[in-house]
Image (cartoon, rainbow, N blue to C red; front, side):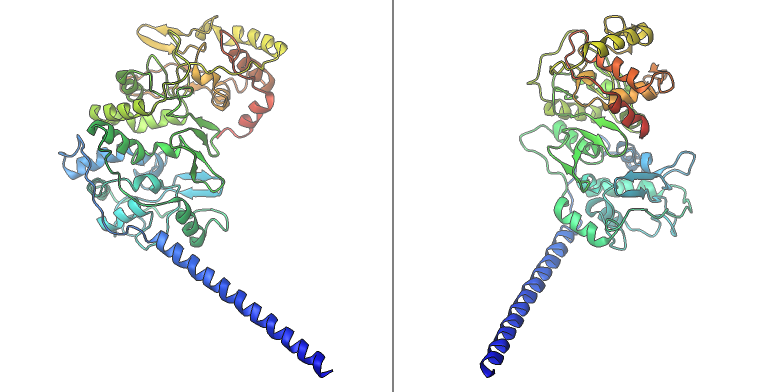
Length: 459
Protein backbone atom coordinates (compact mmCIF):
# COMPACT_ATOMS: atom_id res chain seq x y z
CA UNK A 1 0.00 0.00 0.00
CA UNK A 2 2.81 2.36 0.93
CA UNK A 3 4.56 1.59 -2.35
CA UNK A 4 1.40 2.30 -4.35
CA UNK A 5 0.83 5.55 -2.46
CA UNK A 6 4.42 6.57 -3.13
CA UNK A 7 4.08 5.75 -6.82
CA UNK A 8 0.83 7.71 -7.02
CA UNK A 9 2.41 10.68 -5.26
CA UNK A 10 5.41 10.52 -7.60
CA UNK A 11 3.09 10.40 -10.62
CA UNK A 12 1.10 13.37 -9.38
CA UNK A 13 4.32 15.28 -8.73
CA UNK A 14 5.54 14.58 -12.28
CA UNK A 15 2.18 15.62 -13.70
CA UNK A 16 2.29 18.84 -11.74
CA UNK A 17 5.84 19.54 -12.91
CA UNK A 18 4.80 18.97 -16.53
CA UNK A 19 1.82 21.27 -16.05
CA UNK A 20 4.09 23.94 -14.54
CA UNK A 21 6.54 23.59 -17.44
CA UNK A 22 3.71 23.86 -19.98
CA UNK A 23 2.33 26.90 -18.17
CA UNK A 24 5.79 28.52 -18.12
CA UNK A 25 6.30 27.85 -21.83
CA UNK A 26 2.83 29.21 -22.59
CA UNK A 27 3.53 32.29 -20.46
CA UNK A 28 6.85 32.78 -22.21
CA UNK A 29 5.16 32.50 -25.61
CA UNK A 30 2.51 34.99 -24.57
CA UNK A 31 5.19 37.41 -23.37
CA UNK A 32 7.12 36.92 -26.59
CA UNK A 33 3.97 37.48 -28.63
CA UNK A 34 3.18 40.62 -26.66
CA UNK A 35 6.71 41.93 -27.18
CA UNK A 36 6.47 41.12 -30.90
CA UNK A 37 3.13 42.90 -31.20
CA UNK A 38 4.44 45.89 -29.25
CA UNK A 39 7.58 46.07 -31.39
CA UNK A 40 5.70 45.71 -34.67
CA UNK A 41 3.15 48.37 -33.70
CA UNK A 42 5.61 50.94 -32.37
CA UNK A 43 8.02 50.93 -35.31
CA UNK A 44 9.14 54.15 -36.89
CA UNK A 45 7.33 56.56 -34.57
CA UNK A 46 9.86 59.31 -35.27
CA UNK A 47 8.98 62.13 -37.68
CA UNK A 48 11.02 60.89 -40.64
CA UNK A 49 11.48 63.09 -43.66
CA UNK A 50 12.03 62.13 -47.27
CA UNK A 51 11.34 65.14 -49.49
CA UNK A 52 9.99 64.40 -52.94
CA UNK A 53 10.61 66.51 -56.00
CA UNK A 54 7.28 68.01 -56.98
CA UNK A 55 5.95 70.64 -59.31
CA UNK A 56 3.83 71.69 -56.32
CA UNK A 57 6.86 72.16 -54.06
CA UNK A 58 7.03 75.88 -54.77
CA UNK A 59 3.39 76.45 -53.86
CA UNK A 60 2.33 77.88 -50.54
CA UNK A 61 1.44 75.15 -48.01
CA UNK A 62 -2.33 75.78 -48.27
CA UNK A 63 -2.38 75.63 -52.07
CA UNK A 64 -0.07 72.67 -52.05
CA UNK A 65 -2.20 70.89 -49.46
CA UNK A 66 -5.36 71.55 -51.47
CA UNK A 67 -3.67 70.04 -54.52
CA UNK A 68 -2.49 66.99 -52.55
CA UNK A 69 -6.02 66.45 -51.23
CA UNK A 70 -7.13 66.25 -54.88
CA UNK A 71 -4.31 63.83 -55.68
CA UNK A 72 -5.45 61.53 -52.88
CA UNK A 73 -9.15 62.05 -53.67
CA UNK A 74 -9.64 62.59 -49.95
CA UNK A 75 -13.06 64.15 -50.45
CA UNK A 76 -14.21 61.00 -52.22
CA UNK A 77 -14.41 59.18 -48.89
CA UNK A 78 -14.57 62.02 -46.38
CA UNK A 79 -17.51 63.93 -47.90
CA UNK A 80 -21.06 62.65 -48.13
CA UNK A 81 -23.29 63.70 -51.00
CA UNK A 82 -24.72 67.10 -50.08
CA UNK A 83 -22.71 67.20 -46.86
CA UNK A 84 -20.05 69.59 -45.63
CA UNK A 85 -16.68 69.14 -47.32
CA UNK A 86 -14.40 66.69 -45.49
CA UNK A 87 -16.86 66.32 -42.59
CA UNK A 88 -16.89 62.52 -42.91
CA UNK A 89 -19.80 60.15 -42.45
CA UNK A 90 -19.51 58.16 -45.67
CA UNK A 91 -19.86 54.41 -45.17
CA UNK A 92 -17.03 52.24 -46.46
CA UNK A 93 -18.40 48.72 -46.56
CA UNK A 94 -15.98 45.87 -45.97
CA UNK A 95 -16.42 42.10 -45.53
CA UNK A 96 -15.95 42.70 -41.79
CA UNK A 97 -18.54 45.45 -41.39
CA UNK A 98 -18.91 49.13 -42.18
CA UNK A 99 -16.22 51.71 -41.45
CA UNK A 100 -17.33 55.35 -41.49
CA UNK A 101 -14.98 58.05 -42.73
CA UNK A 102 -13.96 60.51 -40.04
CA UNK A 103 -14.43 64.26 -39.81
CA UNK A 104 -11.30 65.99 -41.14
CA UNK A 105 -12.44 69.56 -40.58
CA UNK A 106 -10.87 71.66 -37.79
CA UNK A 107 -13.82 71.21 -35.47
CA UNK A 108 -12.35 70.61 -32.02
CA UNK A 109 -15.06 68.30 -30.70
CA UNK A 110 -15.56 65.99 -33.67
CA UNK A 111 -12.84 66.83 -36.17
CA UNK A 112 -9.08 67.31 -36.02
CA UNK A 113 -9.12 70.83 -34.58
CA UNK A 114 -7.14 69.73 -31.52
CA UNK A 115 -4.56 67.81 -33.55
CA UNK A 116 -1.01 68.93 -34.23
CA UNK A 117 0.86 68.35 -37.47
CA UNK A 118 2.71 65.58 -35.62
CA UNK A 119 -0.59 63.89 -34.73
CA UNK A 120 -1.66 64.07 -38.36
CA UNK A 121 1.66 62.71 -39.55
CA UNK A 122 1.30 59.84 -37.11
CA UNK A 123 -2.08 58.94 -38.62
CA UNK A 124 -0.83 59.15 -42.20
CA UNK A 125 2.48 57.45 -41.56
CA UNK A 126 1.68 54.98 -38.77
CA UNK A 127 -2.08 54.49 -38.94
CA UNK A 128 -2.68 55.74 -35.39
CA UNK A 129 -5.03 58.42 -34.12
CA UNK A 130 -4.04 61.25 -31.81
CA UNK A 131 -4.96 59.09 -28.81
CA UNK A 132 -2.81 56.24 -30.06
CA UNK A 133 -5.71 54.01 -31.10
CA UNK A 134 -5.01 51.87 -34.13
CA UNK A 135 -6.96 52.90 -37.21
CA UNK A 136 -8.77 50.52 -39.53
CA UNK A 137 -6.90 49.97 -42.80
CA UNK A 138 -10.02 51.05 -44.71
CA UNK A 139 -8.14 54.33 -44.31
CA UNK A 140 -5.26 53.48 -46.67
CA UNK A 141 -2.37 54.20 -44.32
CA UNK A 142 -0.60 51.22 -45.88
CA UNK A 143 -0.20 53.62 -48.84
CA UNK A 144 -0.06 57.02 -47.17
CA UNK A 145 2.82 55.82 -45.01
CA UNK A 146 4.96 56.61 -48.09
CA UNK A 147 4.02 60.29 -47.86
CA UNK A 148 6.83 62.70 -47.08
CA UNK A 149 6.59 64.81 -43.94
CA UNK A 150 6.54 68.03 -45.95
CA UNK A 151 3.53 66.80 -47.95
CA UNK A 152 1.79 65.59 -44.80
CA UNK A 153 2.25 69.01 -43.19
CA UNK A 154 0.91 70.78 -46.29
CA UNK A 155 -2.15 68.53 -46.35
CA UNK A 156 -2.73 69.19 -42.65
CA UNK A 157 -2.43 72.94 -43.20
CA UNK A 158 -5.09 72.78 -45.92
CA UNK A 159 -7.49 70.78 -43.77
CA UNK A 160 -6.93 73.25 -40.95
CA UNK A 161 -8.02 76.10 -43.25
CA UNK A 162 -11.46 74.57 -43.90
CA UNK A 163 -14.62 75.68 -42.17
CA UNK A 164 -15.16 73.65 -39.02
CA UNK A 165 -18.11 71.29 -39.34
CA UNK A 166 -19.53 70.10 -35.98
CA UNK A 167 -20.57 66.72 -37.32
CA UNK A 168 -20.00 63.84 -34.88
CA UNK A 169 -18.28 60.78 -36.26
CA UNK A 170 -20.49 57.78 -36.96
CA UNK A 171 -19.47 54.69 -34.95
CA UNK A 172 -18.10 51.84 -37.00
CA UNK A 173 -20.09 48.62 -37.20
CA UNK A 174 -17.20 46.19 -37.66
CA UNK A 175 -17.97 42.75 -36.24
CA UNK A 176 -16.18 41.06 -33.35
CA UNK A 177 -13.33 40.11 -33.17
CA UNK A 178 -12.22 42.40 -36.01
CA UNK A 179 -13.35 45.47 -34.05
CA UNK A 180 -10.80 44.95 -31.27
CA UNK A 181 -7.49 46.77 -30.94
CA UNK A 182 -5.80 43.40 -30.39
CA UNK A 183 -7.05 42.14 -33.75
CA UNK A 184 -5.82 45.32 -35.43
CA UNK A 185 -2.45 44.98 -33.71
CA UNK A 186 -2.08 41.42 -35.01
CA UNK A 187 -3.15 42.50 -38.51
CA UNK A 188 -0.64 45.34 -38.54
CA UNK A 189 2.14 43.09 -37.27
CA UNK A 190 1.46 40.70 -40.14
CA UNK A 191 0.80 43.12 -42.99
CA UNK A 192 1.99 46.65 -42.25
CA UNK A 193 5.38 48.29 -41.93
CA UNK A 194 5.66 52.08 -41.99
CA UNK A 195 8.19 53.74 -44.22
CA UNK A 196 8.44 56.75 -46.53
CA UNK A 197 9.14 56.35 -50.23
CA UNK A 198 12.80 56.09 -51.16
CA UNK A 199 13.91 57.07 -54.63
CA UNK A 200 15.26 54.39 -56.94
CA UNK A 201 18.68 55.69 -57.95
CA UNK A 202 18.55 53.67 -61.17
CA UNK A 203 15.42 55.50 -62.34
CA UNK A 204 14.69 59.04 -63.44
CA UNK A 205 13.22 61.72 -61.19
CA UNK A 206 9.99 61.55 -63.21
CA UNK A 207 9.71 57.77 -62.71
CA UNK A 208 10.28 58.18 -58.96
CA UNK A 209 7.66 60.92 -58.75
CA UNK A 210 5.20 58.62 -60.53
CA UNK A 211 5.99 55.74 -58.19
CA UNK A 212 5.52 58.05 -55.20
CA UNK A 213 2.12 59.20 -56.44
CA UNK A 214 0.82 55.77 -57.48
CA UNK A 215 2.05 53.97 -54.38
CA UNK A 216 1.33 56.75 -51.89
CA UNK A 217 -1.48 59.31 -52.01
CA UNK A 218 -2.89 57.83 -55.21
CA UNK A 219 -3.28 54.52 -53.30
CA UNK A 220 -3.90 52.64 -56.56
CA UNK A 221 -3.21 49.27 -54.94
CA UNK A 222 -6.26 49.77 -52.71
CA UNK A 223 -8.30 48.62 -55.71
CA UNK A 224 -5.83 47.19 -58.21
CA UNK A 225 -4.49 44.42 -55.96
CA UNK A 226 -6.13 41.24 -54.70
CA UNK A 227 -6.96 40.93 -51.00
CA UNK A 228 -6.65 37.88 -48.80
CA UNK A 229 -9.17 36.58 -46.26
CA UNK A 230 -8.09 39.20 -43.71
CA UNK A 231 -8.40 42.10 -46.13
CA UNK A 232 -4.70 42.61 -46.77
CA UNK A 233 -3.47 43.08 -50.30
CA UNK A 234 -2.08 39.79 -51.56
CA UNK A 235 0.07 38.89 -54.53
CA UNK A 236 2.05 41.29 -56.71
CA UNK A 237 1.28 44.95 -56.26
CA UNK A 238 -1.11 46.37 -58.90
CA UNK A 239 -1.78 42.87 -60.25
CA UNK A 240 -5.54 43.36 -60.23
CA UNK A 241 -8.35 42.20 -57.98
CA UNK A 242 -12.08 42.17 -57.29
CA UNK A 243 -13.03 45.24 -55.24
CA UNK A 244 -14.64 43.89 -52.04
CA UNK A 245 -18.45 44.14 -51.96
CA UNK A 246 -18.58 46.31 -55.09
CA UNK A 247 -18.65 43.61 -57.78
CA UNK A 248 -16.19 45.50 -59.96
CA UNK A 249 -12.87 44.04 -61.03
CA UNK A 250 -9.93 46.45 -61.00
CA UNK A 251 -7.70 45.05 -63.76
CA UNK A 252 -4.00 44.45 -63.43
CA UNK A 253 -1.92 47.54 -64.16
CA UNK A 254 1.15 45.44 -64.89
CA UNK A 255 -0.22 42.76 -67.22
CA UNK A 256 -0.42 43.44 -70.93
CA UNK A 257 -3.36 41.03 -71.08
CA UNK A 258 -5.44 43.31 -68.84
CA UNK A 259 -4.77 47.03 -68.33
CA UNK A 260 -0.99 47.11 -68.55
CA UNK A 261 0.03 50.30 -70.31
CA UNK A 262 3.44 49.21 -71.54
CA UNK A 263 2.57 49.59 -75.20
CA UNK A 264 0.66 52.88 -74.84
CA UNK A 265 1.95 56.32 -75.78
CA UNK A 266 2.58 58.60 -72.81
CA UNK A 267 0.16 61.20 -74.20
CA UNK A 268 -2.62 58.59 -74.52
CA UNK A 269 -2.17 57.58 -70.87
CA UNK A 270 -2.29 61.21 -69.77
CA UNK A 271 -5.40 61.85 -71.87
CA UNK A 272 -7.19 58.90 -70.30
CA UNK A 273 -6.53 60.08 -66.75
CA UNK A 274 -7.21 63.74 -67.63
CA UNK A 275 -10.48 63.30 -69.53
CA UNK A 276 -11.67 59.75 -68.82
CA UNK A 277 -11.46 58.71 -72.48
CA UNK A 278 -8.79 58.13 -75.09
CA UNK A 279 -8.47 56.31 -78.38
CA UNK A 280 -7.30 53.25 -76.42
CA UNK A 281 -9.85 53.10 -73.61
CA UNK A 282 -12.49 54.75 -71.48
CA UNK A 283 -12.98 54.61 -67.72
CA UNK A 284 -16.24 53.34 -66.24
CA UNK A 285 -17.41 52.34 -62.77
CA UNK A 286 -15.24 53.11 -59.71
CA UNK A 287 -12.40 54.34 -61.92
CA UNK A 288 -14.69 56.99 -63.38
CA UNK A 289 -15.13 58.36 -59.85
CA UNK A 290 -11.35 58.51 -59.45
CA UNK A 291 -10.91 60.47 -62.67
CA UNK A 292 -13.80 62.78 -61.79
CA UNK A 293 -12.64 63.58 -58.27
CA UNK A 294 -8.89 63.26 -58.61
CA UNK A 295 -6.78 62.65 -61.71
CA UNK A 296 -8.45 65.23 -63.97
CA UNK A 297 -7.15 67.82 -61.49
CA UNK A 298 -3.55 66.58 -61.49
CA UNK A 299 -0.87 68.83 -62.92
CA UNK A 300 0.55 68.01 -66.32
CA UNK A 301 3.89 67.19 -64.72
CA UNK A 302 2.36 64.72 -62.29
CA UNK A 303 0.25 63.11 -65.02
CA UNK A 304 3.42 62.66 -67.06
CA UNK A 305 5.21 61.14 -64.08
CA UNK A 306 2.38 58.71 -63.38
CA UNK A 307 2.14 57.81 -67.07
CA UNK A 308 5.85 57.10 -67.30
CA UNK A 309 5.77 54.94 -64.19
CA UNK A 310 2.72 52.92 -65.29
CA UNK A 311 4.13 52.48 -68.78
CA UNK A 312 7.37 51.17 -67.29
CA UNK A 313 5.42 48.77 -65.09
CA UNK A 314 3.26 47.52 -67.96
CA UNK A 315 4.07 44.10 -69.29
CA UNK A 316 4.58 44.30 -73.06
CA UNK A 317 5.46 40.62 -73.48
CA UNK A 318 1.85 39.72 -74.25
CA UNK A 319 -0.03 39.08 -77.47
CA UNK A 320 0.56 41.88 -80.01
CA UNK A 321 -2.12 44.49 -80.35
CA UNK A 322 -4.46 44.63 -83.30
CA UNK A 323 -4.89 47.78 -85.31
CA UNK A 324 -7.78 50.06 -84.29
CA UNK A 325 -8.79 48.35 -81.07
CA UNK A 326 -10.21 50.93 -78.65
CA UNK A 327 -11.26 49.44 -75.37
CA UNK A 328 -14.19 49.34 -73.01
CA UNK A 329 -14.37 49.77 -69.27
CA UNK A 330 -11.50 50.39 -66.88
CA UNK A 331 -8.56 50.45 -69.33
CA UNK A 332 -7.74 47.84 -71.89
CA UNK A 333 -6.36 47.28 -75.36
CA UNK A 334 -5.27 43.97 -76.90
CA UNK A 335 -6.93 40.55 -76.70
CA UNK A 336 -6.13 37.56 -74.57
CA UNK A 337 -6.49 34.21 -76.32
CA UNK A 338 -8.49 31.78 -74.24
CA UNK A 339 -10.19 28.50 -75.11
CA UNK A 340 -13.53 29.04 -76.83
CA UNK A 341 -16.09 27.58 -74.44
CA UNK A 342 -19.31 29.21 -75.67
CA UNK A 343 -22.04 26.73 -76.71
CA UNK A 344 -23.34 27.32 -80.23
CA UNK A 345 -26.98 27.76 -79.16
CA UNK A 346 -26.01 30.35 -76.55
CA UNK A 347 -23.87 32.23 -79.05
CA UNK A 348 -26.67 32.16 -81.63
CA UNK A 349 -29.18 33.68 -79.22
CA UNK A 350 -26.57 36.22 -78.21
CA UNK A 351 -25.96 37.20 -81.82
CA UNK A 352 -29.64 37.98 -82.30
CA UNK A 353 -29.76 40.06 -79.12
CA UNK A 354 -26.56 41.87 -80.10
CA UNK A 355 -28.04 42.86 -83.44
CA UNK A 356 -31.21 44.08 -81.73
CA UNK A 357 -29.68 46.01 -78.82
CA UNK A 358 -25.97 46.66 -79.45
CA UNK A 359 -25.03 46.83 -83.13
CA UNK A 360 -26.42 50.32 -83.66
CA UNK A 361 -23.65 51.76 -81.45
CA UNK A 362 -20.89 49.16 -81.40
CA UNK A 363 -21.24 48.14 -85.06
CA UNK A 364 -22.26 44.89 -86.71
CA UNK A 365 -18.64 43.79 -86.69
CA UNK A 366 -17.94 45.01 -83.16
CA UNK A 367 -15.61 47.77 -84.36
CA UNK A 368 -17.21 50.60 -82.41
CA UNK A 369 -18.08 54.08 -83.60
CA UNK A 370 -16.51 57.53 -83.56
CA UNK A 371 -18.34 60.84 -83.46
CA UNK A 372 -16.08 63.47 -84.91
CA UNK A 373 -12.66 63.11 -83.31
CA UNK A 374 -14.01 61.35 -80.22
CA UNK A 375 -14.33 57.66 -79.55
CA UNK A 376 -18.04 57.48 -78.73
CA UNK A 377 -18.69 53.75 -78.55
CA UNK A 378 -15.69 51.46 -78.04
CA UNK A 379 -14.83 48.52 -80.24
CA UNK A 380 -15.64 45.12 -78.77
CA UNK A 381 -13.52 43.15 -81.22
CA UNK A 382 -10.02 42.67 -79.86
CA UNK A 383 -10.87 44.45 -76.63
CA UNK A 384 -8.89 43.29 -73.61
CA UNK A 385 -11.65 44.31 -71.20
CA UNK A 386 -14.05 42.08 -73.12
CA UNK A 387 -11.91 38.94 -73.16
CA UNK A 388 -10.38 39.04 -69.68
CA UNK A 389 -11.12 35.86 -67.70
CA UNK A 390 -12.95 38.04 -65.15
CA UNK A 391 -16.24 39.13 -66.80
CA UNK A 392 -17.77 40.94 -63.82
CA UNK A 393 -17.28 44.40 -65.30
CA UNK A 394 -19.08 43.42 -68.49
CA UNK A 395 -22.07 42.20 -66.49
CA UNK A 396 -22.09 45.42 -64.46
CA UNK A 397 -22.03 47.58 -67.57
CA UNK A 398 -24.84 45.73 -69.35
CA UNK A 399 -27.00 45.64 -66.22
CA UNK A 400 -26.44 49.15 -64.94
CA UNK A 401 -25.08 51.09 -67.89
CA UNK A 402 -21.64 52.48 -68.51
CA UNK A 403 -20.74 56.14 -68.24
CA UNK A 404 -17.42 57.91 -68.49
CA UNK A 405 -17.01 60.87 -66.09
CA UNK A 406 -18.02 64.36 -67.17
CA UNK A 407 -14.63 66.06 -66.99
CA UNK A 408 -13.41 69.48 -68.07
CA UNK A 409 -11.76 67.85 -71.08
CA UNK A 410 -14.84 65.75 -71.92
CA UNK A 411 -17.87 67.52 -70.44
CA UNK A 412 -20.49 65.57 -72.42
CA UNK A 413 -19.37 61.93 -72.46
CA UNK A 414 -21.19 59.28 -74.40
CA UNK A 415 -22.67 56.46 -72.35
CA UNK A 416 -24.47 53.18 -72.47
CA UNK A 417 -28.02 52.73 -71.14
CA UNK A 418 -28.79 50.08 -68.50
CA UNK A 419 -30.50 46.86 -69.53
CA UNK A 420 -31.34 45.69 -66.02
CA UNK A 421 -35.09 45.94 -66.77
CA UNK A 422 -34.85 44.98 -70.46
CA UNK A 423 -32.89 41.72 -70.49
CA UNK A 424 -33.08 38.79 -68.10
CA UNK A 425 -30.08 36.90 -66.74
CA UNK A 426 -30.05 34.30 -69.51
CA UNK A 427 -30.29 36.95 -72.24
CA UNK A 428 -27.46 39.02 -70.79
CA UNK A 429 -25.34 35.88 -70.41
CA UNK A 430 -25.98 34.94 -74.04
CA UNK A 431 -25.17 38.35 -75.52
CA UNK A 432 -21.98 38.63 -73.48
CA UNK A 433 -20.99 35.10 -74.43
CA UNK A 434 -21.51 36.08 -78.08
CA UNK A 435 -19.37 39.21 -77.71
CA UNK A 436 -16.58 37.25 -75.99
CA UNK A 437 -16.45 34.70 -78.83
CA UNK A 438 -17.20 36.78 -81.96
CA UNK A 439 -14.91 38.71 -84.35
CA UNK A 440 -11.83 36.76 -83.33
CA UNK A 441 -12.40 37.07 -79.59
CA UNK A 442 -11.69 33.75 -77.88
CA UNK A 443 -12.88 33.99 -74.29
CA UNK A 444 -15.05 31.66 -72.23
CA UNK A 445 -18.80 32.14 -71.95
CA UNK A 446 -20.78 33.94 -69.25
CA UNK A 447 -23.46 32.01 -67.37
CA UNK A 448 -26.85 33.19 -66.14
CA UNK A 449 -25.60 32.50 -62.62
CA UNK A 450 -22.69 34.92 -63.18
CA UNK A 451 -25.21 37.59 -64.14
CA UNK A 452 -27.55 36.82 -61.26
CA UNK A 453 -24.75 37.19 -58.70
CA UNK A 454 -24.12 40.73 -59.86
CA UNK A 455 -27.81 41.58 -60.22
CA UNK A 456 -28.47 40.41 -56.66
CA UNK A 457 -25.49 42.38 -55.28
CA UNK A 458 -24.92 45.32 -57.62
CA UNK A 459 -22.66 47.29 -55.26
